[in-house]
Length: 202
Image (cartoon, rainbow, N blue to C red; front, side):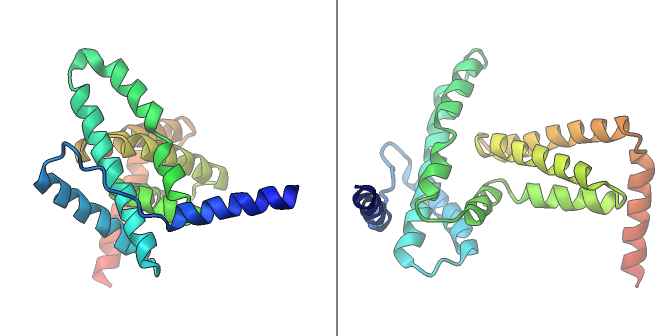
């Protein structure tokens, strides 16, 4: 019985993965659709997927996510609707990763998330490590956890300004935390800038 159930599940997953994911363009402006398709395609190109159908499906999943976010933010654009906005965003938040998991592994899903958030996680994490080489392993781990949280919020933001806002917010939290642990961030930053200038001269 278990073998039959496993075979049935595998068959369902295979059929699902081989099906064409449609673009949900109803009610969307034609120029906006082309812009979003291009944005999604750029992210997919970075994955270098060998399977053409898989690449199209992943592109359409990402594009559909942008369409959905645009609809939600447009629907709750008033300040007095913020609670409803956040509730609606949370309701749909996990759909993207679930859909992508049919076609991508966890590292590729992370790459999509990075593509949708301008690569801020890796850039901010590397900058923090470069600025403070003496960070302990547990401190590096905590910084990465907060950056991943920032990325999840940023993915649901309405625009680039909103996405950058979340990373800046979490950077402030990280800096406050590091200061409380005894790091002199001004001194660390000044020394970092000196190292950068010295490297340029070489």
